[in-house]
Image (cartoon, rainbow, N blue to C red; front, side, top):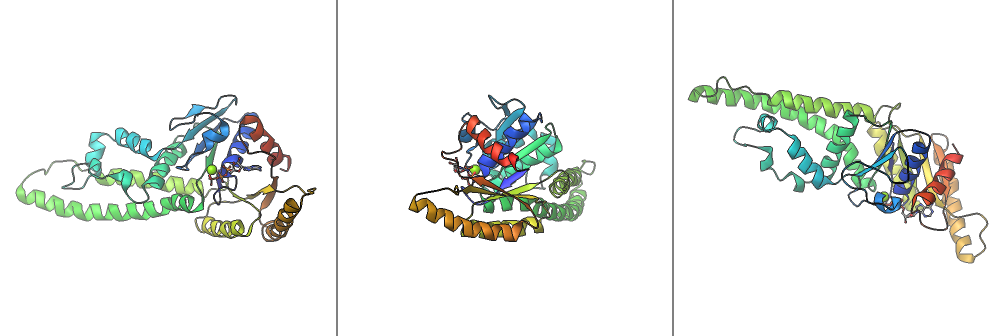
Length: 305
Ligand SMILES: Nc1ncnc2c1ncn2[C@@H]1O[C@H](COP(=O)(O)OP(=O)(O)OP(=O)(O)O)[C@@H](O)[C@H]1O
Ligand SMILES: [Mg+2]
């Protein structure tokens, strides 16, 4: 399950509430933050890091905050010298020659590599992703398609480069018997990416939950998000509308906000309730912080399902 949406609408709170609820039902749950500005640890009130760790005070729940820099180190550490050589192009001795960490989109790519790892080795019954605000997450979700076509091109290029390179080596009479595994490595990588793509668009394993608040700007961003998710064929069944003011308010300020929200709520119900299950969450009287407050949010979230 992936929770996404505009900045500050309650993605992390809802991801934490869902994880804690599912863990209490007995599922083995892992919650992963792909947002480089992590706040999962703040909400859970404990240190969560780049290694999977059990969440204190909640049975069956582990958490991880993906750190692109650590992911890069682990990846470089995980690539054997032979694989590194296999992946490299003639004249470029090692993928270490690239400063991958500073390449455009590297944060998303490294987060994606980490996500792939968990899709490849499903040790948990449920993985909940707390994602970054919309733009970043859309770039992350577009990666399987981008990478797939990029790898396809790279494989073709490697084939033709291989012929040229092979010819050159033959001319200078060296390396005729050298084994060249680069195409195989690229094809393996392409298969992994294709598998992730398949998983992401498989309704029986993936569900993206857009989180929004009843305000014009959030509705617009949700529309954009839903269009992109539709294009990427990522299944959406539920939408959460968060931070709804209580109905029985007495102060003028609260009444005005409630009125503004009501108009947007009517529109949201009108646009979405045919297609999705829309869950409305009240604005609590304090911020969502600590296990017991998260449980309070879960009780609203799951009393309606
Ligand atoms: N229903 C609610 N009632 C009261 N406070 C809430 C509610 N939902 C979220 N909050 C508070 O709103 C703030 C933003 O919530 P949260 O961090 O979950 O949003 P986010 O969408 O993950 O933000 P970001 O885009 O920065 O990652 C937090 O302080 C959180 O405690
Ligand atoms: Mg967040």
